[in-house]
Amino acid sequence: MTVGAVAKKQSNFSRILTGIWDEFVYGGHLLSVSDASMVLAIIIILDKPVSWQLVSIAYLIPQTVYSLNHMKELKVDKRTNPERVLYLERTIRIYPFVVTLYIVLLVGFLLYLSNLSVIILVLFIGLAGILYPKEITKKIVGFKNYYVGLFSAAAACLLPCIFYRLTNSSMYMYLCLFIFLRLFLNTIYFDIKDYDSDKERGLKTIAVYLGIKKTVLLLSIINIVSGLVIIGLVLMKMTSYFTLGLAFVSLYSFIYLRITDKLNGPKLRQISYLMVDGEYIFWPIFLLIFKVILG
Image (cartoon, rainbow, N blue to C red; front, side, top):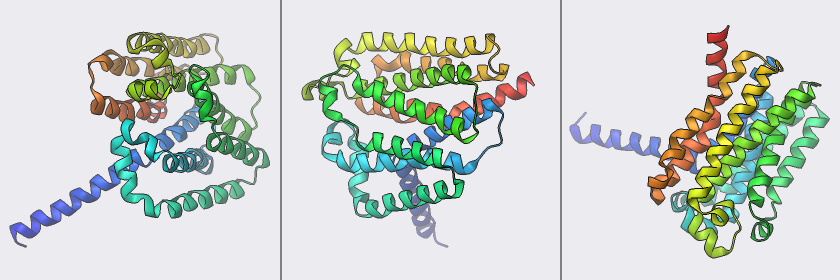
């Protein structure tokens, strides 16, 4: 094989890897894997056998909703998320088939579980995501943050709760509060990168309302409180000591919170997509590490 042929082969391979990575990040899969990771983390805390069908459903719900919403918001996102829009515009022709595939897979997994309560919950969460009332964002400060946080926290907690038919409501309330606080932090942080465009459009996000410096301070407080929720849950002996692994994510978040005001547009978007959205993937990992350490 000639040098030119080797270089061409490497170039093709590099393009394939880049395409896979772009689809993973800009196609919404990172967010969906993160949602599935939250459900997996809850299952680990409960010490229940993992149902990969349930974890797959937790992935497919947001993936379907994100895909539909991304297609509707291409024009709006062109300024705030130019990298994602550029990628989606290149792949827009196949998206109707892709979304159809997600829906077929989701229905298939739901029928396989044969759990009517889970099916009703999935339909409710899916419709809540698709019918998100965006205009209210111009009337109520932080509406999107509350809305996304509440529904995503409900999905992460209620899916395993209903599936495993659990009754420990006190522990679940604390876990739901923890997940809500983490998602609340996540969505507010994303509003920082959209600060200029949101302000122009009259959206009452928390970042626009408080300003970036005060918003970062608020996020630092939420970050600390979320860690204290887990510590309190363990101290009250409502869950095992290895659940302290979730408190470790507060240290993780301080890394990007400290450097936020030093980041420009593209770098801030990279941090938002990778570190902030990617946080939840570490939850099961932190839990398993602490489970091994603490026996």
